Amino acid sequence: MIPSDIWLFREQPISLRHFAKINTMRGNTLMTILVVWLCTIGTLLCQRPTLPLTEAFQYKATNSCYVSAHRGGRFLHNLPENALETFIYTHRQTPQSFIECDVAETKDKTLVLLHDASLDRTTTLSGKLTDYTWDEIKDANLKDDFGRTTSYHIPLFRKVLQWAKKEGVILQVDIKRGVSFANVIHTLEKYGMEKQVIIITYNLKDAQKAYKLNPGLLIAVTIRNKDEWKRFKAANIPNKNVIAFTGTKDKSEEIFTILHQNKISCIFGSLGNIDKKAEKKGQDVYWDLIDKGVDVFATDRPAAAQKAIESYHSAKLQKPNAIEDKKP
Image (cartoon, rainbow, N blue to C red):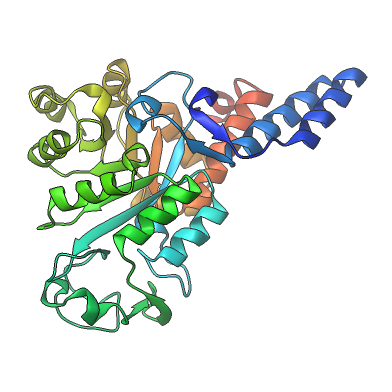
């Protein structure tokens, strides 16, 4: 769990705390523990970061686990990926989750959200985004993951930053190929979002570029095995500036242990096969990965993953050996 001293609370769940006090007086110890836990979860839902993420996400053994909603939310009827309206929906469903989004550039260098180089799959336009100016695409409609046209439009990156700033939402920003890192990072700085953004990179050259542009950023760097760990160590990026992306395939605890020993938290991509496995076999799939060392799930199922995380901690609280007892 991220330490409470890095958060600014919007409100206090007084009624639950009062209820806990009453139960303590009655000697109902178990009920008190459960209510206090619910108070903690409820309070966490109302938090916003007040420290830079480079400090907040340095690995600690007391840390909890979080979810990052892939493209802000996927496979939702009438809610397209990379749409501000989808982000708002996801944030309401799982207020503590990160929002992952894809930043692209138009012909006139306007920063917008779009995953593909082409407009065909997700909008009512066709062709490459870089062939259009902002004025030429701003009225295009977005399509959901089922191909249905919605009433929503391609969002400006700055509008998403303004929303996230106001709501205290952590963004994971995937800078698409060919997009200027300087343009993206200068925009973050302009809107004061350095404390709330994780920059996703796919190679050490880009990670070094991001760090050079702003040494205060938290940067997601791919470190899936010991060889990639060795190459990262030679890149001269401080550990405090890094959260490791450990891939999308289930693996042993070894790489998580190495990273945690160096105070680096770990993102695991459950999107795709692992999410599908969890949908069929249940929350134990997520529980096993938490035990191995996953700190953040990058997922297409944020609500389900968040529910699994909460039930994991609830089981641990009620019965410390509950997770181990479930294993054969």
